[in-house]
Amino acid sequence: MTGSDKYMLRMMADDPFDQIGYYSVGERVSSAIQLVNLAFLVGWRRFAFHNMHLSDGPERISRGVTLFFLAGGYATFGVSTLGDDLFHWFIPERYAAGSKVIPLLALGAFAWGLGEVMGVGLHKARRTIHLSWINLLAAAVN
Image (cartoon, rainbow, N blue to C red):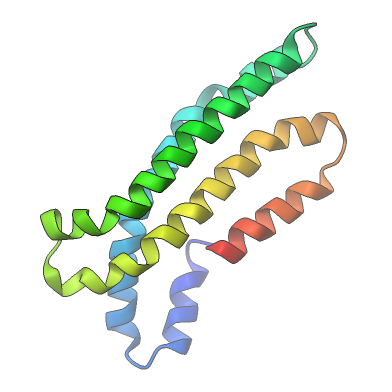
């Protein structure tokens, strides 16, 4: 997903190199959500697979998913609403057009992280086909 978007922009845009430059700056700002995802996912699989067979495991995993949903959701909302402010503080005004892509790219990153978190339960329930749908949704949003 990360590389194909720039190729699509190159084929679709009238002035592709400027558009790719604007898009790339917006993509870098929205990649803050990937940091939130990775911070959570570093220990998630070990935690989830360890707890899924315990008697209170489903409640623990449920709390973990809720925590990810809240933290990731608030981070996505924050980056989506404050991303254009980051442009005014840190990035030259010339690239301000790139702020338009921040909300959707942040939402796509959050959807990817949610897919990774929910994947543990889908593996346990042997419903891995749903992982394909979640990843397709994340790719479509991206």
